[in-house]
Structure formats: structure tokens, C-alpha cells
Length: 149
Image (cartoon, rainbow, N blue to C red; front, top):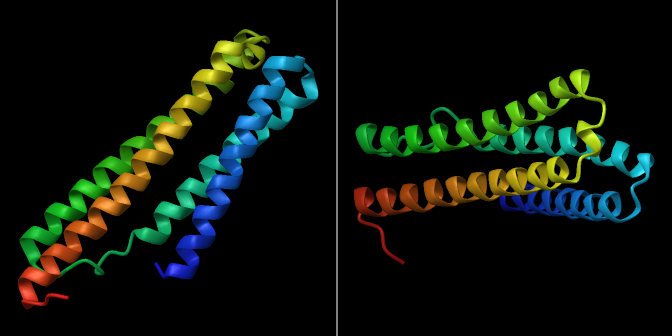
């Protein structure tokens, strides 16, 4: 991914996360249904943005400096990002599924705080996976091609 595109994605992710935090605080303080609705609209937007961000980083033949070591870096990246993305999606689907049984689940303060914390941890985990894969690939390329700055 190009630096300009990465900066745009990082800014969008920060804005979405801050707006999610702001609406979480508004939900907890004011207890108005409009704020709850906006909060639960922002959550899937964050999930879609994170999915698209990881999609932009997932290039199949981009990291093939060395067949074996590149595959190890690739499997580590794919495993962590897939795990965090699937768990975030499952968390959202569980909350929406429980909403069918219990109408007050989306207005429960504990659920709102837990969803925010877990989505933030997911974003941080994905960011760490991308940075780790980039760093490991850079080291592997420097070692393979004997390049040093």
C-alpha cells in the first residue's frame, strides 16, 4: 500500500474510532435512543473499514522475497488479521442476534463498553500485524539482497 493511501486509511480509522468513543460516552451519559442508534451504525462502518484496510494490505505475491521465510511471515500476518476480524464480526453478530431475544441488549452499558474495547483491541492487533509483517519483510529483503542503509 502506498504511503498516501496508508495515511488516509489511518486518519479515517482514527476518526471513526474517536466518533465511536464519543457516541459511546453520549450513550452512557444521556441514555437517548438516537445516540444508541448512531453508535450501532458506526460499529459496522468500523468493521467494514477495517476489512477494507486489511484487504488493501493483502497482496498475494507481494512479499515473496524468500519462498520459505516469506510464507512464514505471510501465515503469521494472515492468521492474526483473520482471527481479529472474525472475532470482531462474531461479536457484532452475537450482539445483533441477542437483540432478537432481549430488546435491551444494545442499550446495556456493559455491552457498549465491551464492544468498544474489543473493537479497539482488534484495530490495534491488526495495526501491529501490518507493522510486524512490514518490518520482518524489510529485514528479510535486506538480508537476502545484502542491502543496508
